Length: 353
Length: 164
Image: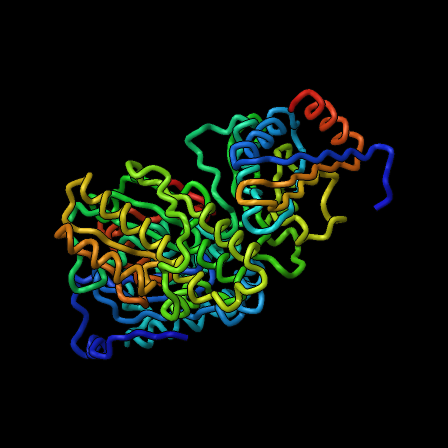
């Protein structure tokens, strides 16, 4: 269990609650992680607890949905309790609950969603269902140097690769998205092809350092340099073909293969988000989602953005992957504007934003 | 499997992603509600490309991108019949079809295209059109289409005899 807490927050109860503050419990169970977090006013994290299921999924090389739901059921209550005790507050101090409503695996989403409904109902406080993708975009507001509006955001994860023009906490224009595989999915599939394990992103990032990207040049899947859509399926196939053709000695070339693959992905992601900032005349770009934890991507985008005098905002690694602090952060902006959910609301597996 | 009189087998080589999509589109244009397509083949063999073509044949509007359902497991699109695009890639253990919602959609009048269909016991699936894709070269794919039941065999005979 990964825990991030602000020890100073323990003084909160003795100093008495500041009534102008809104303390929100965030809950996230859309995929592998069971997460809970306590956040004040959408920006100050009092605690963030993530119970990862990666060890459970590892032998299968991916998420096993039925297993995911069962693990969420086991983890949800202890994770929420830990988030409250790490924040140094009692559940009665909470003003509201924000929970991921979708997109994700329905069985997994339902665990957090039903828990949140019941929890808020028992405490007689409002609660709101949140779009997981909006949570990721808002993860940059949990850092000390949030971007001013408007800005462009690249959301890259296992299930999504999209570029948004963000004009407020809750308003986004989808500029482009993947037409086939997500960037994180390409990482996972290439890692599996080469026997590097799950999650693929971390393994490839690590091994790529030992290789030289220029030794094997894979195609850059730009599709069309003027649009913001992505396509990573062809790149995945190019790696598969390389392995097929060099079946006798590819094992010795793995560092070069993954370095070449990673450079192709990173080149395209960096080019498109910077181009999006140019087109929208934004000086600030945000990189969010699990793939934003990739060291080479962070380095490359920072370098490319500097050339264009753009400011890059990337959350700390703990806030790139799925977490509940980002759900509480965006929940604050909805709740502040009076948006709440009711007991009849349900989860959704897919969404267009 | 015993060769039945109704067995239909068809083999074709496509030489580009577009040709694989075109084959999907031809089949999508002709299939009727309740048809299940079981797709098998290695990573990069063109299963998702085939379903992208299938979707166009089913008149799924162009502004819907048919993306890989590897993470989401099941994607649904509106069309002449609803299209359910399923991907069992991340499932390596036998799972209860009810847990992922597959059982439910197999009993609708939609079209169900299942990638990595070999990850589920064949006997759990209803009669299906089986499509196996193999990587032969950078762009070349060998595609084998089989059906063992009369309804699907007749459907394929009608479609594929009249197209290239």
